[in-house]
Length: 340
Image 1 (cartoon, one colour):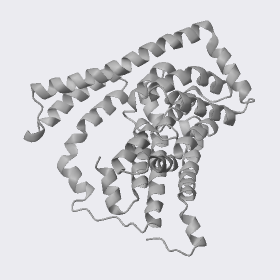
Image 2 (cartoon, rainbow, N blue to C red):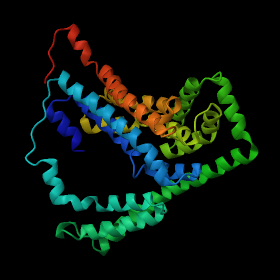
Image 3 (spheres, one colour):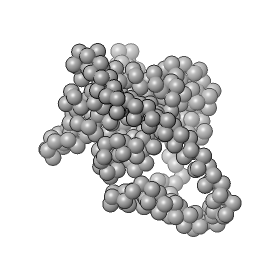
Image 4 (cartoon, helix red, strand yellow):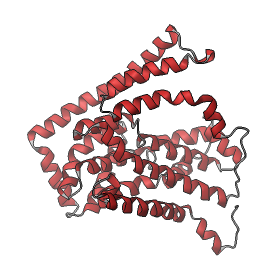
């Protein structure tokens, strides 16, 4: 509601401003410590501690945001947009209001030490209330607490109802043996190709995302897709990451792209232009799953040296990938000089 008008004021075209915001926002689903409901569900499905899920998810999430940053940076250079100096530096703001990060730090630390997400959440809730009382204008009274509790319960019921119904579907598929049958069908359709398997999973996630929430799309797709991916040599956690990342594609991939349409409404821009703009800026959403499948080090699988090499290669590759997609290099054909 405020970042899109700010981008428009800076000089970005309305459909670009409306597309950049949803492209950047879905990165929150990948970024630890809170990865949406999907992160906790992944921990349950894989049997891995949530701390391990966070560790594996961190670098890919950073690369996603780095990709969006590079593309937006070069888009600004193409449009000769120069950033304005703020009255207060980020460090000055952090020094004054650093304590607002305490709840997030508390949750992260306790989950890293192996405590359950529920236990960490309770401690985070307590720290939220404590932090709110530091300043008079942010203090939470009984009325505000009850309102927040009601909103939280309503959100939990929506997720719980969805997961409960999907749990029945998963149980039927698992105990009937249909999971392996579907996995074999996916592999056969892909001709035993890992690349084609990932493409089929992307298409399935896109279709499912049109009718159900992304968490539900992840759960349903994971039951069928993960066995197929592991059969082709992908480790279990990387396979779940592939499905989890691709389950987000319906937010920014036409023709549905609900998040992009919401951005278009705020930006007062053409919906389809905004949708394709979001699709452009979120392109790493499709590169990430390929890296999980073909580069074991991307999911921390392998020796320390293998992981370091993978990180260095991917860091440079992400910059190059985003630079080429930004299209700024095409300006040399027309003799225009971008802003510095």
